[in-house]
Length: 174
Ligand code: 2AM
Image 1: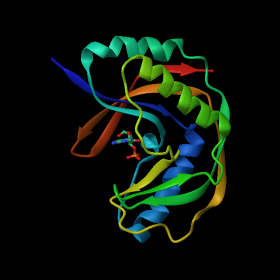
Image 2 (image 1 turned 180 degrees about the horizontal axis):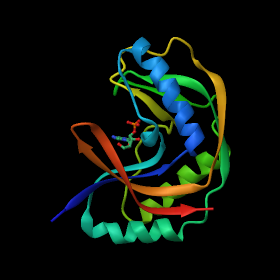
Image 3 (image 1 turned 90 degrees about the vertical axis):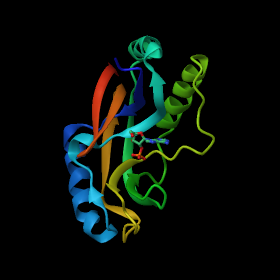
């Protein structure tokens, strides 16, 4: 019996954007010293919940399904590096206000369910390369990528030998 699940809320770029991000990851990985993430894993985490007792899952599924359909457009145009946990990522010079509002509203709703938002600032990003000891040589993406977000997903992360596998448990789309 599964007693706890590793859960997070995320937005998933459309197929073309994910392919473009995976190509960028492949270009950067040899320069940054890590390994590129595959197209199917390209996402932006809005709320990482960590290990959640399975008894709380029903409420999270309900919250997801009842959420107003998200709508916005995000331009990815910059590259960044988190030295810990050694990630090279794509993000924005100016994060979209609708994206920041969605993040804030989601955490307000999660707080009503007893979850606590992290203290640190939210840096919207898509992880491209893991175990990256070096930053990307440029701070800009070679070509800005615009994508419309219209799917909010509650996702389970399963850690395995070949990296993380993500499974969407519930999705709210526009
Ligand atoms: P990352 O891509 O920046 O590592 C599933 O693991 C998702 O949750 C990933 O997008 C990951 O973000 C994020 N995540 C994992 N651990 C986290 C943590 N401690 N705090 C915030 N986000 C985390």
